[in-house]
Image (cartoon, rainbow, N blue to C red; front, side):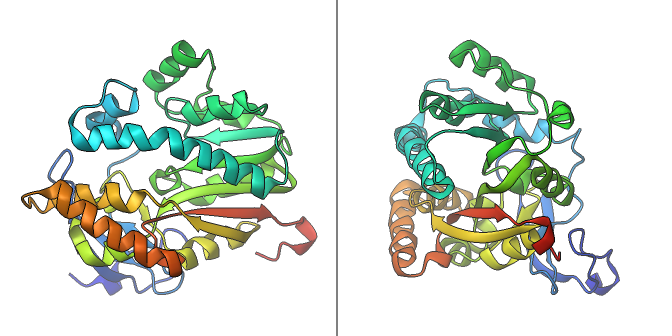
Length: 305
């Protein structure tokens, strides 16, 4: 297959896309997908993923964990134990980077609403956007917090929000360029956009190659590193102000990656490799398994694309 003849990069339009990896959907379909890398903007992306309307059937495996049922297995219990700690950490990141302890916040891709709930309890006015009906119902019943569907975001007023957050959501977007443009409109002058994404150049990504669980094809359409995500955001009027690691992700992703490899003692091996990735990221932050990025909206007079 001649990748030079493929369509241009879907994010920047450059030609000459390069083969990057061939990955398998280990979680659901066992289908194989090709990843390409753009030589211009550096983004890695999943070639020919399912359409947005088809994607839900690839997500069904995760519904039990997402909807807050009792965790099963050692990995599930680890996930739930870490989640509450990470919710507090995320809240502190937002308040520290926004220089405020209250305001207007849009949580896009809010899932079941745990982060929205904790921010409301801390005094924030929160608007949550979630595409799946089941998760919106869960949030309403669990937290009495009404979420809106994605199309309803068009009715929100421009310049409304001090902060917009996406926690492991942006890599799922079928229209990242349009999404960033809408976020720019919705943020007030000087507002911040906070995004967490897996890091395709992390230590554990390099170690596991196509078995790295955070490729998570076809659910993850985009595979960013700090340079490629910063370039993309800059083209839409945002400046990278800060980024930091999510320290526990290396352990969880390494355990799942060991399972993809069908190694014996996958939990122990994953914890050991996760610790190695975590340790490297102490001094080389850009090697962290996942990163939180804080972008600030530039003034229109300074926005040269």
